[in-house]
Image 1 (cartoon, rainbow, N blue to C red):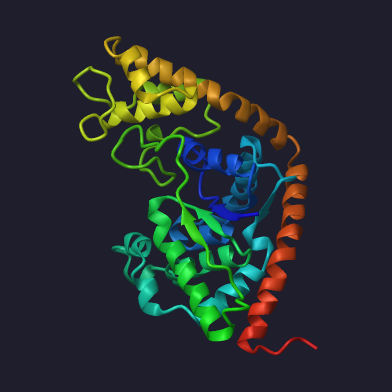
Image 2 (cartoon, rainbow, N blue to C red):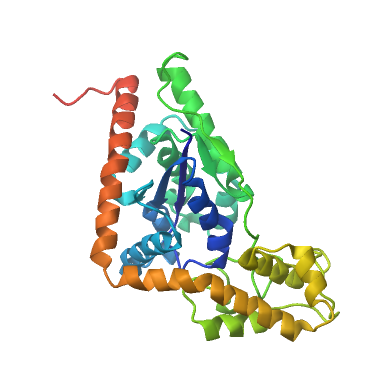
Length: 336
């Protein structure tokens, strides 16, 4: 069976973009794949200015709770916290001795996140694509579902695996599986409500542009009613000319399981007020069962932690022999 690995950082409240862009696919992939899902908390500490120790543990538990609430099933998938397995950090060091400085320096996201920060950039931010490679390769993942912005990182993981196998193994008995990036269709490419030319993101400058999965109904309605549209008044899907309206149409289509063009024809001529109210009501109904399930799980955090501990044990069954094989291949002396 095809094995899938995916992870998410506990760097803020999960939002509608996470749900419709990633989580709906995570749940669907459980039907015909062996899925390994991870809260990648080690990735969340690479930027000192954004790392708040007081909230990291709470956010880690909240994100795991959210994953369970949307339908990640610990009976069918492995769900765990990255830092609960030291094998990820140890494997990263092995890969650091295989990866090249030049190829890391070219990573687009490092260039973007380090711009203007000078010497304040952490080594972790520079090196986190290698940690990401370790996350993936430890589990012999065949597929890694990612957005287009992460494609370079999966290519790096594949290059590292190929280079390692070439240097320390044989074609007949490789140490690591070569992963491939897959781009499952998102339920919607959710954009910021206040700036519909950029993706909805936890790092957005304004909370008004983000719908949290746990936002109360009145808050959701207020945010959608204040979403940026345009002055034309017509409702049609055209990302270039009408990014705000197009974003709301895609959200409504994903929430109601209907076609964008059908919805545009239905609401065109009725005014933006009526249209936005319909979007708000659909999003509220979409999130209601998730919020109810989240509340149930949050009432028993010990059970969520038990699920994560069990997931870590199951993940360790795969990661430990993989790491041992890699160390042996590199010539590291086994402990007597």
